[in-house]
Amino acid sequence: MGHFLPSNHSSKANTLTMSAVQETAFQEKIDAELKIEAKDWMPDKYRLHLIRQISQHAHSEVIGMQPEGNWITRAPSLRAKMVLIAKVQDEAGHGLYLYSATETLGITRSELIKQLQTGKAKYSSIFNYPTLTWADMGAIGWLVDGAAIVNQQSLRRTSYGPYSRAMVRICKEESFHQRQGYEIMSKMSNGTIEQQEMAQDALNRWWWPSLMMFGPTDSESAHTSNAMKWKIKRGTNDDLRQLFIDRTVKQAELIGLEIPDPDLKWNPKTKHYDFGEIDWEEFWEVVNGNGFCNKERINNHIKARSEGQWVREAALAYSEKKQNGV
Image 1 (tube, rainbow, N blue to C red):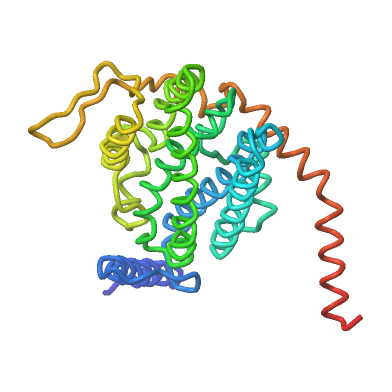
Image 2 (spheres, rainbow, N blue to C red):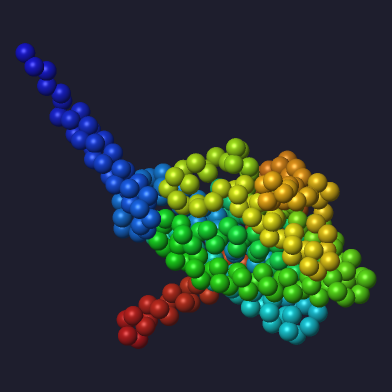
């Protein structure tokens, strides 16, 4: 006599089979270099990975306004002030693009902000370092934005369509930011002795944190495997870090600055620069909230959002009146 499975068991089996078919079709689409769009079927892990990565990127753009905004009123010339204001405004725009891209994945802006302010979501650890001199504006533009460009250029080819399209415009503006920072460092390294020392000091302080921006080594990265499989990331942490070093060493030599790494040397066999050990203990200390400015950055964000509540309410009220024809 045959055995009949309960109907709910059969339903679960069918669901599992359908999910496997969908996942296979999903991976085939990615392997064919086709974009995944917001309304397409996607695995939950893919969606959650994107929410984590894109929101972290958005948070970094917004929090990253603070260390540079700190120098707007102290810029050494009107031109320098205008350029810095434009740059900070660009970063706000980048945050807006990226929050909008994240919202297409089914999460609200308010949820994203709450995750940031409660510490559930992270942002780039580089923005928890203080900006002590005007040369730091140069170092951030040259090194921090330079590192961001290396990472973000590959993200223009990321598999998720809304993220990929946002990165096209962001990369264009980040390239301007990098040139602006390099111009500051170039002028200072060719200026007075005091300016040269200031530029070198900024490079000394920002070099290693800039290398940390690419994240842990591939062997220690918890997210690299799936990110590469799904083509969310198009380059590993270590490969992107090496590309940044190879580019930046030559730029430093051109303006007479010295990379603060005694182990740095060209390797003719690999055709890359070998470099010293990164202080990963410092990296994790900052990531876990124990950097110089972690608490200050979040407190400033909470304060600014609270003080801006009336602006958001007024904008919504005006929008509703326009929609109602008032």
